[in-house]
Length: 334
Image (cartoon, rainbow, N blue to C red):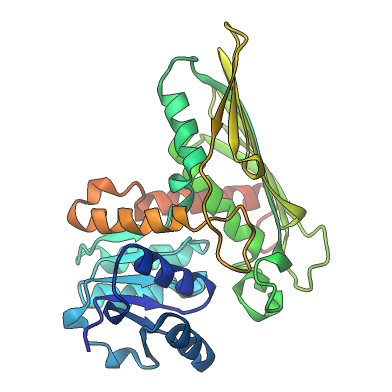
């Protein structure tokens, strides 16, 4: 059986990646899914008509073009190693465990397989518009920014308890995961800060022992940023304000628009964002389009690595910022 694209892990993100492949015109007969859980294999097979595997040895890797790793964050190195061992390009979901990412980098050092770490928000239309405004240099340099990314953890998977999947594990907890998820695109905008300080706390009872709120500052010497990332927000938000020398940018993702205030003209310019359909059960603002575009970019990167905007070294740099935040507040093992 030919399975040209293999998705390892058929949980929520794995099924989303199957949908991405189908959206990109990959026929279901060319998609395979691997998962140890029978219920997930049955669901993926019935819902999408793909081939599923319980044993990775049953996969014919001579026919596989690329591997997508949608395992829990602390298991990414397992899926990546499978791809690297067979010399297959590999896309890896958002990372949160530095030690796991270092394992992947070191294992691939002498093999040089193309690794594409996730950078989903780089493909959000609002993020791309903001990036274009800043890069135009029309409004001078950035002076400061403030950003709040908030969600309510039990809303992520209403069909299961937070203790039953990785977000309820302290090392891979929901808020801890979203910090590097957001920093991946923030550092693409502004670069890596010279210093980071912050706090992380458990502020609400979610039925698991994780810190649900991270608050921190990023020092760029001549520019400063502040961020709050939490999974305690009862209404999901992404609120961003960027102050430039000659303008201000405001973005609220639920408004589906960016507001640009031009100081010299006094004009307010609005950038309307296109609608993107959300999968059933997900927040209406979490559209599928950016995930599809991300996999399309992965395919482009297979042919030319320079076309993919994230690297494993950048991932490591972002996770080191997460470590700085935690260490400045006494360390993760305090």
